[in-house]
Image (cartoon, rainbow, N blue to C red; front, top):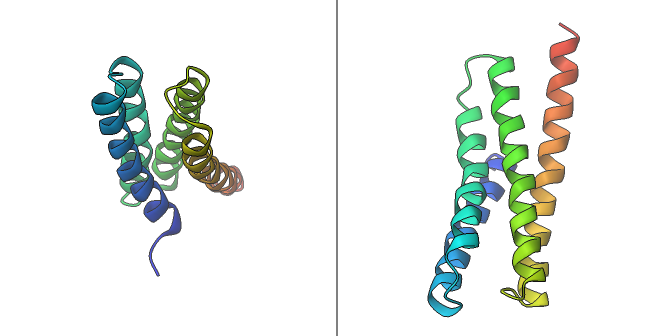
Length: 119
């Protein structure tokens, strides 16, 4: 079995790309979707980069950036829902994904920080 957060964040990035394409094509929305595309795909990119970190501190930094990007992604998804670009079902489906990713990243960063502080 592969790395859970790496797989989940990559699969989420795929969903984000598809969602942004949908928003542009069907809803004619370009401004918010650009923000969403940037941060939503950045989560997985930073997680992927962290896997090749040279030090624990580097790993922690990349995972912290991934968490910040995930939190920003949550914001844009909520905004798209509240401005009626996403239906409730669309919102709940993708929001549950990013919420789970945030929870995993919080756990990883917390544990990594504790390990750094104990050295």
